Length: 393
Image (cartoon, rainbow, N blue to C red; front, side):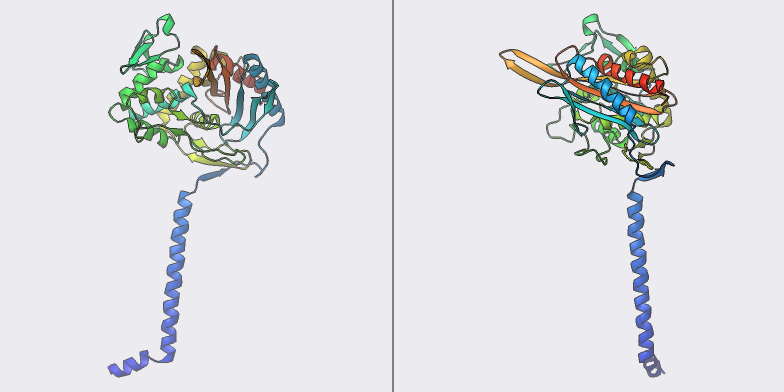
């Protein structure tokens, strides 16, 4: 019987059937495996949402582009800026409506340039991200107070941090939201140290989680890369550096990456990737922080303009929200004990403050003082908003 069974299984016809069955199983396994790879691949792909517009059209609005170019040129001429840029973006879609880069040539005139991938320390613009990270820990609230004293604080043995009004006696004891409104270096530094003093790396981990410093590529923006920064993972890290990281130093980043972050706050926490083509909105992060904390930051950023250092960015037509930024980015030596500093002045924000449609960043570099993000870049921001409202954008 067993021999008969062996003979039956061993016939050419049955061998052929078994071969087909094995091949079929292998094919099915390969399909399943390929499907698994595809599924895993698609899970890693960014979410894209159709905007209802024709795919592939340029997003730049010619009239607005021309206006922004003119307004930026006027202010850069007035302050003698070296180079600068201004970007206007639609909040929900990330569509760039105007994108102007200018630099001063050897004749002292301003010409167009592609400086959008240029990274530098953008100073107080980073304080918004620092404060949001503090709120995300749940260890502090905006109503909590910090003592900034007379506006001068010793950090370690030989380092000193100052607020902009130290020569007028400082702000004393203020709440965290007020610290952002008046851009207190000491106030934001204290908050970050209270929240992350026992684990400084967690501060940087939270910024990464919020996708701060992204995106690292935008079609049409050459040379863009992730922001670079110092952190406790570096061999030369020192604990005092967290103070300077909190207020925008120790990190190089582009204006368009900062704009992407502020745009996410304007967008209720949803971060979209800036784009120069219509049709799709690419989601970088569906929710950079809790809805509660995003709502709180929206209120504070409006207060920066209505009752803080960003007043010049305000508009007679609409409520505006945003943050000032001023940083020293270079120092030049012209002889013995003769130095001249290069400053970056910026304003980043959006409007309307509570139903945002557009976000804007203005950044300029200049030599010497005075240097004011609110007074200089804020003025350009103001003029752009006024133009857009007057032209019913």
